[in-house]
Length: 302
Image (cartoon, rainbow, N blue to C red; front, side):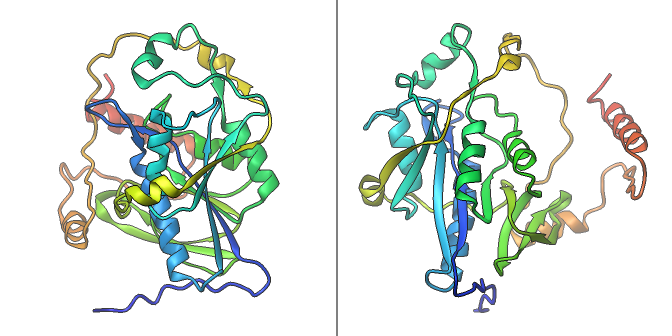
């Protein structure tokens, strides 16, 4: 068995502060709340980073931003405890200074969405991150509830002025000043990146699957609330129109390669159509024109 030489070299002064952002997920069939798949994979990478480092070299904490009170034993409480069952002693609930009533259940949220004001919790995370000043923030690429737009990592990185790296599948090493990670590329390929800290990274669905949540550990863990400011009213989202779902446009073929064998097959396979084009050093207008041309050729746009 080949040994893993990845390591985290930390100074003797202070540990590396790592924050894993987690959210409420939703089962695609039953609709029940659960831990989010990509957020659980992000937490798994953070736990692996903590495990491969020297004792006390990494200080890991998990945060969940909530605009309302989460009652013990509620569906939200049980879903968040799925993260505690992965080995955490506590999970921080980043809440506003004045809590609202308990949130609606998943089955009732869509029916009442029109009557409720739209608020956004990402400013709470920005305020708390500025106070705590961690060196590394890890999150999933897209949420399973709410808008699910995938914009949260971009909003946080822009507000904090940090670099953002998307599609991470492994964190190889971290020396306190730089992070070395693997990024997922199309057709199963990987790219090694070295990022200056502090930084924010989002995890791809090709990252290692999260461990099973232990029931006893999930019950023992603590959900601790921490007030971090006021909520932001999202007037733009209130103007969104809500219509019944319709058939989605055709999507380009995307290869999900999780094992080394699948990645090799995807990388070695000849691209269908042979019309791919690699562009480097071109303007944004030229890139946009080529993307538009490809979407029309594939039938995504008409």
